[in-house]
Length: 290
Image (cartoon, rainbow, N blue to C red; front, top):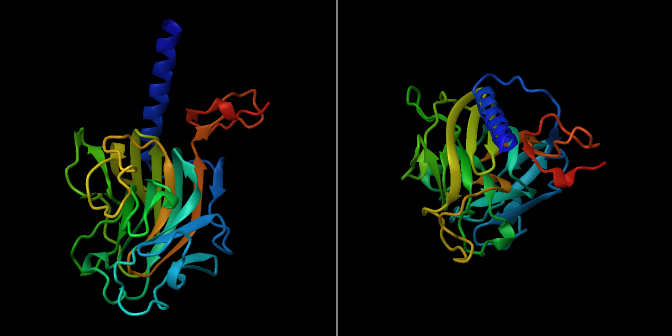
């Protein structure tokens, strides 16, 4: 029993130490980082756009140019017509540190909802697009929302949390709304902004913008509204979200993404194994190789 209590104490200490580090300027080592985007094409990624089947990258919405994933609508016919889209990385993650750069460019496509002006994001713990129905508008997921300033002097923070078909615990209570604003400053124009997302399974989630912690919450779970046209068997309200896919968003506003990389924080923690990683904070020793 003493050994068991000691193990729990060490785990909790590691957990809170990591959370504390997340609140500081980024000083983590390069160990464990993996590039998700090869800079050449969308290999390893899958599209799902509202009104279209999985894999149909309608209008070449997501495209690659100059090592950048670009979201564009110049090949769309007519108005936007709620063609909300997402580009999913095909590998699920549970404990991870995601990093990417984004910038808003161009004009909102005609017919897109006004709230999508300079609005996009990255989804995580998302359902697989292959479980989505053709007319489902958004995936059941949690979103790190990206916004840019519209009018000078009017605050519009980025790195917010939005919850399509999900809920979170914020400041110790279940948050009743759809989005939580972060504490970030407002960024204007087409400047590149660095976003980081540190997710510890179904426990702590930390949002960072340009190296500063701007939001923190816990226990992402299925629930709430906003998502429409889903398969009822998929939406099990109250179920904690332990892992899922990561997806880049398309809502009618052109945007660029680059430098997309991830550090998996769950893996072999046995120092005797060939694939032991000092950066892991969650043991998955079934994957150890000796």
